[in-house]
Image 1 (cartoon, rainbow, N blue to C red):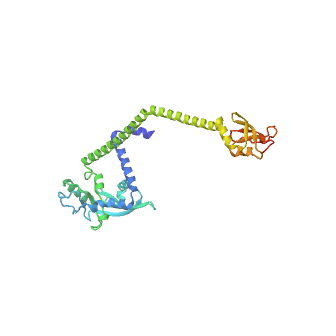
Image 2 (image 1 turned 180 degrees about the vertical axis):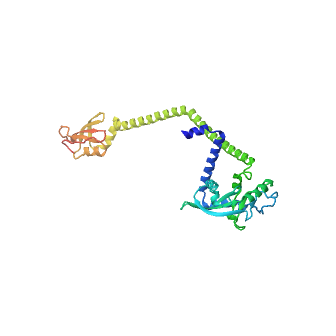
Image 3 (image 1 turned 45 degrees about the vertical axis):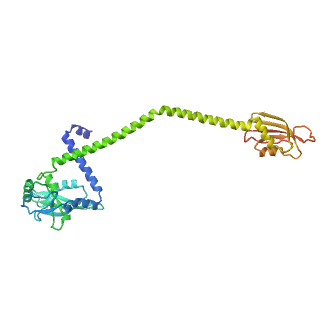
Length: 343
């Protein structure tokens, strides 16, 4: 609650500083994700690529080339290598500012200290750091020379020796933090603000176009909703009609009298004749005569009929054959029983 109240009570300048600090912290966290070999190349690449201009501490810098790296005299800065716990570059700068007097003998009034992370050792939680200290007299001479120069150097390098450009410590950020040289120009800040505004505008346009396309698609869906509902009902009716036609065709194939009589005519053994055929729903009752030795029940079963009851009709045999009576069902899985007569 107190944190929220402090945010509400803060002015715009304080909020801007908090936002900038958060942004720098996030950039430092992202920098820690970069592989150490790449980070080392990025950290030392500026001095290696730039035009290296040695400076004796007194020469005029008016003819300094644009993008060049200014190399300080060897005796102008003192460089020391130490080992510290793992931390971000910004935290390292804060630690050096607090421990300046303990770390370097040149950390008196007007002196400037800068640092370069040489190696990170995550397995031990430590890192190796080079600290460079620029004494007050050299700092004053450098400040005056840069104030008269028309071009700002890309880097201000302190070297342990002339052949160790990869081990150089860039003191320009430390000098800018101390206010001894100008930081990033107003034009640079304005350019970055314009870039950030254009990026946010581009992102906003992309979001707006995506939202507009979704709205247009939703409008098309809403417009076709009525036709889609009608088509769905028509399809449902067609499926219902197809199902009804199938049921009628199945019922006609099994219950239609003429079709049933034709099926029986091709099923019963040769010489069998019917005297009576009674159809009642799924139940079919047959009465007739079959020749001696004719297997009427077996023929009916082989043709797919379910014989519920089969036996003699109670009449006396005649020269035409033996009487029989059978009760069939047209529904499947009916229990079959046989009483008397032929099986």
